[in-house]
Image (tube, rainbow, N blue to C red; front, side):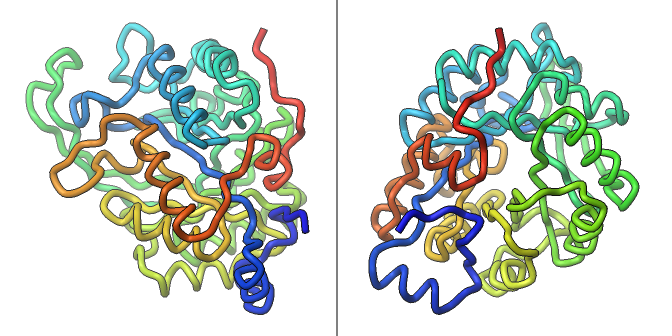
Length: 321
């Protein structure tokens, strides 16, 4: 049987029982979020910031088994700062595509701290295949570690609320549709589904709905098996589901995702440690860990072609000439 995510439903118990009995869970699509838009080398010196560093680590992850990459560009002359320049994103996308011919390229539309709407949506002009669309207001509090070259001579505390309500998510989704970029909705808790259904009802999301379930993020769902199962059972159908866990919960959340037949995201945006006090040496190290887990649990790793089929992307990758 050829599986595609638009027919695989992790909440369908009979389907899951039969698939496990026949060793036919879907091939695992591994997504890697390598950098993020907040922390940098001050938090882990191995985190890639420049376009060249990101392209090289994307290549290493691609060779290790990742078939989907989520990218945050940094200002070339100030790599501690998130870029909102579409030309910078296009250059980064081009470098990644040169090294990873068939990887699915996703650009953030998170915008970074303090970005306005036009800045947040600028990466859409860089022709990514997908872009992140955060769902639901989120309260965050975090510490930016000192980084003298960035003008931070000591740790700085930040607190903010991301206002991703009905109007804003509609605006983001429409902008993505107009640019031919596929929205990847980021769901943090059950209340987010109301906003997702609103986008579906307005024709701003097309099935299968590309969805990432986030666990362990501040003001989001707890990273527990109970919460994972609840979000899966309440997801709209057909839904292409990827799970991620933040920080120390990354391995357990990924294990649940692997067992349930979903796809998983790893990477240094979400987690900087392999274990307590043990810093990650590279994003590929995290991908390799997922591959080991998956094989022990009976999941094959999706090829680039399988990943595109499973997630509903064209077999013709974007180009950046």
